[in-house]
Amino acid sequence: MATEDVIIVGSGLAGIAMGVQLKRQFPNVTFAVFEKLAHVGGTWAQNIYPNLSCDVDSQYYSYSFYLNPNWTETFAKQPEILDYIDNVVEHFQLETYIKLNQECLNASWSDQSSTWTVQFRDLTTGKEYARESRVLITAVGVLNVPKGREDVPILNAFQGDVMHTSNWRNADWQGKNVLVLGNGCSANQVVPWLLNEGRVKKLVQIVRSEQWVAAKVNSQHIDVFKWVLRNVPLAARAYRLWKAFQMDMGLPAFKKTSSGAAQRKNLEDSIKDYMTSTSAKKYHDILIPKYPFGAKRPVMDHGYLQATNLDNFELIKGDGIRAIENDGHSIIDTQDGHHDVDTIILANGFKTQELLTPMRILGKDGRDLRQQWNKLGGARAYMGVAVSGFPNFFVLTGPNTLPNGNSTLHGIECSVVYILRILKPLLSWASPQSSTIMVKAAAEDAYNEELQGWMQDFVYSTDVDTYFINKQSGRNTLVWPGSQFGFYWSRCVQRVKWADYEVGRTKRS
Image (cartoon, rainbow, N blue to C red; front, side, top):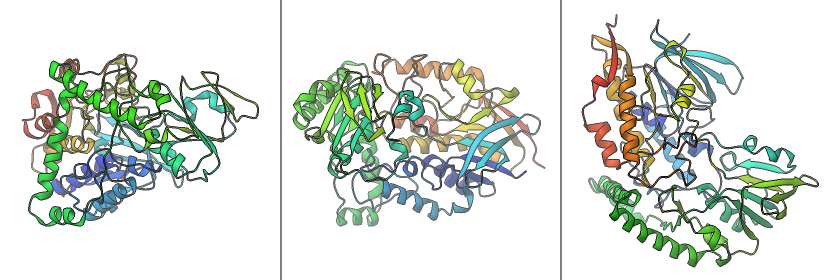
């Protein structure tokens, strides 16, 4: 059986960041990156629906170790982001380390050999095989398993086409009747495109709740701006730092303080003015939120609000589809409205509370990671990366590492730095070495108890349906309750609390 020092599952931004830093910091370490898709890029390779772009300034939504002065606009679109990721892979010569079309099925830990055995399926041949590694790192992201057709059983009676935005298929939309379920970020991007570019005959959108939809001011980067970033020393880094500072300054708006309430009130008034002045008046009661800004992830406007004014658009608030009748194309919504539909587009989000699904991870004594997390009321980890009972196992984009209205990529880089600080005694070639590193259960408990205490200072609430919160436990399992500077400091600067880890030491022969 082939053996690596490190196996990384996923070649999105997190997996690539880990691969780059492993290669740079530990040149003698062997590693491989396994990706189930046919292309690197993770969510930016999986999601190809039209009008898709980033909601974070491109200069900040790029690696600190590979700045890109050539972004063409403030908020880059999906094709340009994917090109950037390809360039990173090529620049750091990661191609030979990445295995595409390889799905990770399960992984199990052996105390006897202090290794992980990871089972894969080659999606081009269907063949299953195993690889061993001393360290296993998952980098599969949070938005990777969509709520598909199987999660809406009534759709079995529908005779038309059904697609989730993350499994987009190009089609001739002209003259078609389309139903969209959901109103998050993907719906905000897809709906105006279908109406304006796709030229659909009629588009009906069914939504359960409102969203705070803020104006998105995008602009093309002029050549002078790009020249400055490319040629003036530290200009690109200074601009990136300024953007990071700006975004962190928005954190108080998410907190339950008097200043936070005042900041939220200003934001809510500003966004409400934008929404009411841009969208169709007849839909204001459906569009304008009753909950405070920040309780759910805010949505940036991609032309959606203006599109609500079109005659061939209809917005309905309800709990989805009540029935499908006649020839399987007649949809009845929960408000008893009847709609003839050719295609249904699911823009209803992802299974964010089922982290690492559908992989099965078995740690010490055969303990199942998913079962362990279910008993605890949702996913959790020490510092968002390490789990008790699972030696030499680390999670990127793990529990409570997503930022408050900030760049996910910044958090990923900080987690990579922290994991490699932990792995240094294991991956270093100096002797003696550690063979196993695992966080102590008591440390994991204490860390998460403190973290959930911090969470009480924020506006997240079980009263508002959000993918951040585990519905069974009411616990926010995804968001980091603090600033990105604080996240950076705790992962990259502060001393590692080695007393929180169990380190098994052995000499390398």
